[in-house]
Image (tube, rainbow, N blue to C red; front, top):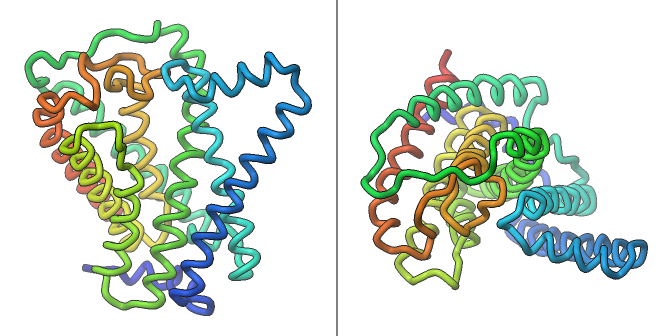
Length: 295
């Protein structure tokens, strides 16, 4: 594996790389994120009439409406803000130091994002498993009207998660431990476990965690190969756009979906059929990004 491009990000993390500092940083980021969330809601309820404040809170909980999904995506900006504060307090760094060269990040994001879009368009012509043809959900006009906010929200959400897992946790572990099994494996496992849904059947929840862990491994590998977060953010954003804005499982964060599949994440039979397909798509996506980076 050629991870030489990753060395500048490791070098930037090395001066404050220790397990104690990493654990403190993760805890502080979570606490600051909670505090910012509390502060934002306190301000909202103080400034807005009670009925509007309650309506806003209900909208955030309603992930089956366009506004609810967009609000949830935009709230990830608080996570990025919390991480920025943590970096300044504990590491005397800024967010951009986690991403790599800005110009290179943008260049790789565009190049790999285009490759992934071409791949996902091609995949739409694949035969679907039986009885899983998606049905129309949002009218096209409404979907297009929300599209700019959808894209911005997805960029905010995916960038925040990549900054935390591939930017912060991974780089500090890589500066502390030389073996990729640790600095790729640990953040990816944490990423997977955070996708655990206790409301799902045990098998379904395990499959979701497994997929998210493998996604984390793919994103971590691409980050190390490219030396920026651009490819990982592109992979994450295109994947989430497909799963949230194009076709979503029925009742699962489907407020922005143009189509919905005739099953939910709690359907074990459907998940058994779709899990191999999703894993194949993930592998093809990782391969497409690798090929795009070589051009």
